Image (cartoon, rainbow over all chains, first blue to last red; front, side):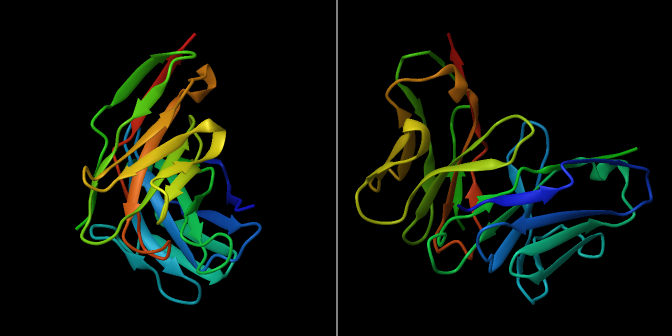
Length: 118
Length: 114
């Protein structure tokens, strides 16, 4: 149980284009989803927290207009990197948690998406 | 504010020997503590957690961790290391349930040599 998937696993795009990353909880309903960014050999940096049906809460320094987050259902959240630039190249990881039930209290992570902007 | 410290960037251990990966935390309130493992180019896999109850927590793949409130520590241990345990390990803390954000330590790379 507690499986979280991400798609795509790897994406290469040209500078100026937008990229959408999907995060799905496969076997539980995720009341909260989190988006992280990880630079090489570094820890995870929380970008934003989203609750189903609500606007995402962004961490300080994260541009909400650049990193659009949608949490339209209890099993799907999307992160769209708009007008991507080379400095947006990174490893993006989502996680999901559920209030109540067998998966309470724990964040379960997706496999990550590596974005390379040329 | 909550924080997590993993004082060792890397831990080297020979296969078959016991391993310890250290973690200390700072929170105002009762901590919820977690260990995750990350393999190259992958997301984090949940290993174990401490919420309440017995201070010794057993998790996946033979790992365990001991919550020590007086030392504010939550060290990860395994009696006999495997080469396949080589990975990046993260300790994390929150003071509420999973609806709230985790604070991660900087990570410790575990290298198990044959």
